[in-house]
Structures are given as C-alpha cells and as structure tokens.
Image 1 (cartoon, one colour):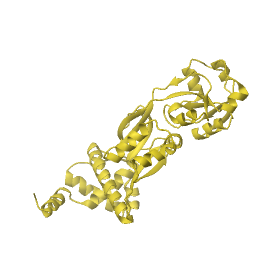
Image 2 (image 1 turned 120 degrees about the vertical axis):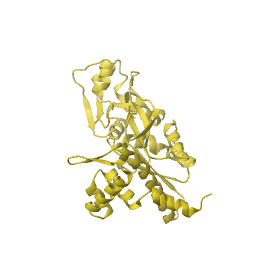
Image 3 (image 1 turned 45 degrees about the vertical axis):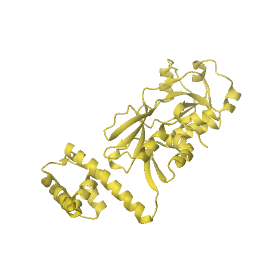
Image 4 (image 1 turned 90 degrees about the horizontal axis):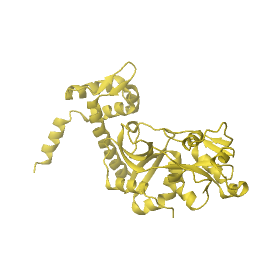
Length: 309
C-alpha cells in the first residue's frame, strides 16, 4: 500500500488547483463569470484567469464563449458533473459535522401539486424507512435546469427525456372528472359527457408540458363542446381541487395525485369516462449525483402506492 503522502502528491499532480475547480463550478452552475465572481467575492478577471488556467492545464476548452452568454462544452459538462457532485458531498459532510447532527438532508424538487397530494400525506412512512433523513422540499410551477439547483432528486411529468439528469419511471397517469359527494348529491348523476359540458367546471392553468385542461380532455374523449361553463378558474391545481372539495363544481382529477382523496371519498368520480395520458411521472437524478441507498429508498417510496397513517 502506498503511503498517504504519496497519494496526496498524486492528487496535487493531477489536480493543478482546487481554487480553479471551485471557481469553475460556480461559473458552470450560474452560467456567468460575473455572477460567479459576485458569489465568490472576487473579481470577474480573477475568475476568468482561474478558468483559463484550468483550460490550459487540461488542454481543452471548458466553455463556449458566445456573444452574451457562455455554454459548457462536452468536456466542460463532463468535468462539471464530477466536480459539482464532489463539492455537494463534501459540503454535506461539513454541514453535518459542524452542527453535530447525524441527520442526512435530501433535497426533493416537485411541483406544488405533487408535493401537496403525494409527498406530504405519506411522510410518516418515509420517516419510518429513513429515521435520520431530513427532507427538504422545493417546488416550482415549471421545470428548472437541475445543473443550476442544489437538488438531489426531482419528480417530473413528461416523456422521461431530459438532458440534465437520468430519469426513471415512477408511474403512468389517467385523468377523469371529480367532485365532492355533496355536489353530486345536489346535482345528481350526469347521464352523458354532453351533460358534463353544460355543468359547473373548475379549471386550472397548465404548469408543465402535457398537463391537461378541460378543452383538451373533452377533445380526447371525442367531444367538442361549443362553449364550456366555468364556475371557477385557478392558477394552481391545488386550489382547483380544494374548490371541488368544497362543492364549487367539477374538476379534472389526476388519479395518481388524488388517490387518498378518492379512497376516503372526499372526492368522487362524476363519470366513468377517463383519459390515459401519454406522459408519465419520472424521478430524475441530476448528472454527477451518486445514487446512495437512502436515495434508492426515497425513489421506492415515491413509486409506492402508500396510504397516510
């Protein structure tokens, strides 16, 4: 076995400057020399020198310098994926050691709807599976580039093809009309899809590619109503579903999100008509991020049809 000092000398020989790697990571993550300099508290010229030194040491170009932007080259992408992952892991150990905590934090990015209906109700089971895990949820309405965010896992709805990470199928999805039992009692069973076009509908804005609204749903079941009657329009799907629970009309129910509400009959189906969408839910691991046993447990937990306790 080689002495530790020989290994250290080998690292110094292969890695010309840790400072240059730190500054390269900031530039790649922020896609800006200026923003990286501001974050690091140095001048833009200093950051440019460090990146140029790194490129000269490796004899490759790490960035395409465009007119008013920069973009990683393929060599830059390869280096960034390793450097970013290593720095996140080192920072995580420092964070745990500095506060004396044995907890492990995992950052999960989802839409607000997935977090509200799928993640939060099932946290007790995750806590039993991973008692030391500290979950941090980050939500957004639209898909953000994982290379520019400190995210360990992301749940996305789409075709599974994204350039910033490796995706794995969670489950497919189908969509059908739902309402509260009270609304159904007041208005009675609908006899046909045409009856549904004339009733009080609750709609929500699209937040990602493939998200279905009422017009798209009716087209998918072969109905083209001349005009739809909306009792309420919401920017958030969570608001639309809450409005349906309060008896304000009929909303589109995404089965994988609303399983608990349907099981408890807080919401009921209005019709047997249903649309199976072509897109599905995927979990995405950012490039360069290691899949640990804890990460695998979280992925299995996301995939399972668990019920709250």
